Length: 477
Ligand SMILES: Cc1ncc(COP(=O)(O)O)c(C=O)c1O
Image (cartoon, rainbow, N blue to C red):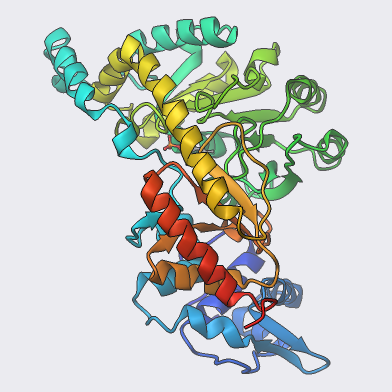
């Protein structure tokens, strides 16, 4: 067995590991453009894996444009692959290609930041935060001398339980809520209590890239369900539930990341019925609910659930205070009983100070005023982005809320080259393949309009469009 295989920290399925292993070796320059790769038989022997595993990895490399096939002769390295390593082994630009993980794109500092689905800190009421911090220290002088309970501060859970019942008309008690350090921790905890290797998991295609990584790390068998502007093909959902008996369906039905689509109310009701019928938990991730432009989105799926088949994750990082990293999971008692020990193992409770500051800020009139202004500001930025992109021959569905535009480029524009060269020009975006459980969607990209101001939005998008034009093999040079 080769000592560099499997690749540490990479995805779990064996052919994925072979894929990453080959990609890394090509990226390191061990095979150059047009070099022939080892035969399937030889590599299978060398890595001590089945030939089919190597075959699938080669096929995926081929589908993703990393290698090409010559009839009866074997697999060869694609010519443009070298672009990923021309920047040197240690540069962040080479590494995000090798692993294609979102966090690695974020690590490269750029001026025109369209890859982070985060709200511009200048749009948050930073000056007022200190008021709530002071209030918390006055009200709870011992707050720093105390741990939170594992489940989360009771005062905060009582408040959120009242909020959910008033706002969404779903009824949970404080005991049915768990406070987590961000929504991502919630997904992680849920995957740990529910997923064993080879368990089937339905998830949207495309989806939140960290969720793909989390479920993959648990060894799940990922089954993608396409999401469209009008929701899902429910016949497909039903047929997959019947056929694969998935443990859960992870979904982000409201201003979905990365597409911005919202699943309509009729589908929500039906999904809950299907979940009950096929005993498949719905894990509803809902961090963008309040970032609508004109009209409130439909109630969460959790509101339709009477039998405990929905676990609801409500993240507040996006628009309340990302620095506090507060989210809540609503779940009926049997699953809550499993979540608590896992949360305890993970960090023994979210910091109490963060919870108390969040509580007092969240319940303030100021937050409501801030939200109204924020919705207007986000809508304006979205309009500006659409205006700038209108000159290009790109396609997207205009979202009614959220932070992102999911854009389809002509297939004649090479996405990898576009990413590398745009990062060099200080413009970042998320290539669609990172959000795709099948690692395809290569002519899509996600552009977040929420992080940079109006002027930077215009400048950066002009750079991006002009660069894409210069790389478009269909355009006349
Ligand atoms: C769909 C979705 N879920 C969860 C998260 C993570 O949220 P948090 O920062 O609260 O961990 C994000 C962040 O981008 C997201 O887009």
